[in-house]
Image: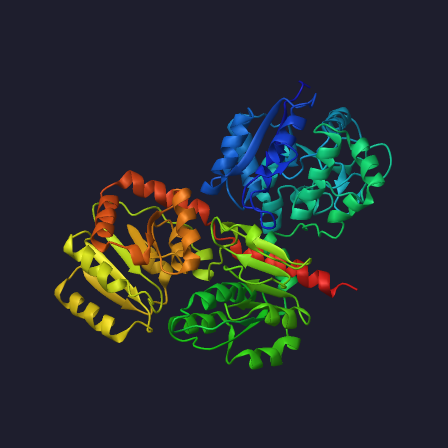
Length: 601
C-alpha cells in the first residue's frame, strides 16, 4: 500500500462558550494557536496541517492569525463540525486510504511525539489482525495521558462514512463519537502511551483557570517542554496543578444537550424593575437569561415592578412566571431557587451580601459603583475596563461583548443579508420611554432632508404623551413615517432595514446581531463606553452624547451613510461579528458552574 498522506486537522473558533476568543489568548509570549501550530509543525509524520474554523464573521481574526503562521485554513459550519472536517478533506483532494488526525485548538501543549506514535501504530496495524479504523490515546475518563494531549487517527474513508450516516447532534458537533459510540460499527482501539499514568492532569484550555495553568507552565518551562517535564514540574508545584482541578470536562452530547441536562428542573429567580426613567433595559437583559433557562427545561420567576406591555407579554409567552413586587417578595422566594439573578442600580453591596450568602448570585452591572459580592458579575459593555471593579475573592467578572444577552428571537435568527436595492428604510427607536426625548427632533430632522424612503419609528407605551401626539401629527402629514407602539416582534421589524438609529442600549446589540448597520447615541452615562467601543471596532457609527447632538448634522450623516452601500455592508459584517448571539449561553454555563460548585459537599 502506498504511503498515506497524514492530514492533521485542528478545529478552532473564537466563539468558545466558557472562554471566548481563547485560541488567540496568550500563554507566555505566544497565542494558544501559535503554541499548537509550532508543536504540530514538529511532527515527523504529518504531511498536511489545516485549521478548520467557521464561516462566522467573528472568526476572521483567527483566520488571519492562522495564515500568518503559514497554515492552510478551511471555513465551514459553526455547529456541524463533522461536516466541517469532511469539507476540509474534500478541499484537499485526499484519497480514502489517507489518514486524518484530529486535534483541537484548545490544546496548546500537545506533544508532537505522541501524535507521531499514534500515526505510526495505526499504519503498522494495517494488514494485520489488529488493524483498526479508529485509534486514539484516550477514551474519555479512561486515560493515562493529560487532557490536552488527545489525538485521534482514522482514515478518510471512515470520515466520509461518518459524514454520510451520523445524525445525532452530539456526533456531528464532536466529529468522532460516531466511530465508537456503537460497538462494532468501526474497528477501534485505545493505545496508551508508555510511562506513568498522567490522566489526572489537565493541560487543555477551556476556562480562565485552565489558561492560568498553561501560562504558568510556559513561563516556567518555555514553549517546547515535553510532557514528562511538565508533569514533573506540576508535581513539584501542586498549587499550580490545583488551579483547574475542579473544572468539569464537556461530555459527548451537544453543548445544548449537556446544558439542558444541567438546567432541567432547576429554578432561576430574578429581580429587576422597569418603567419611568428606569426604562426596560434591566428587565430585557434579565429576561434573556430567563427565557433561555426555561427553553432548556428549567423554571424561572421574575420579581419586579413596572413590567408591562410587550416585554411582559414576551416573558409570559416564554413561560416565565411574573410576580409584581419588590425586595420583600424576592426575599421570600430566595430559598426556593437554585440560583439568583439581579439587575438594577438600586441593588448595592448590602443586597448582594444578603442574597449571595443564601444562593448562587449573578449580578448584571455596568457601573462598578460599589464592591461586588456576587459570584458572577456580567457587564456586556464594549471597552469597559474590568480594573474598575472592586470584587470579593470569589467573584468572577464576565465583561465585554462576548456576554451580550439577547432574547430568544435574536438567538434563533441568524444575521440576515443586508437589504439590497434602492429603497432606504430606517428604524428609529430610543427605548420604551425615550427619557432623553430624542424621537421627535430626530424624526423632524430626517423628514426635512428627505433622507429615508421609509422611516419606522418604534416607541414604547411609556413615551411622553405630548411628544407622542406631536409625532402622530407628523405621521399624518408624511406618508414615509410610520409609528409602531410597543413592538413585540422586534427581530421581524429589524429584518430588511437599511439602518437602525438608536440609543446605545439593548437595541444596539439586537440590530448588530441581526446584521443591520447601527447609528447610535449615548442617552445615558453608562452608554458612553458602548458608542466608543462600537466606533473603535468600526461596527457602527457613533453620534456621540445626546446632549451635544446637532440633529440636522446627524440626519445628514445618516443620509450620507444610506448613499454608501460599501460602508453599510462593512458595518453590517462588523456588527454581526461583534455580537454572535451566544452570550446568554456563556453566562448560563458560568452560572451553572457556580451552582454545581456551591452544591458540592
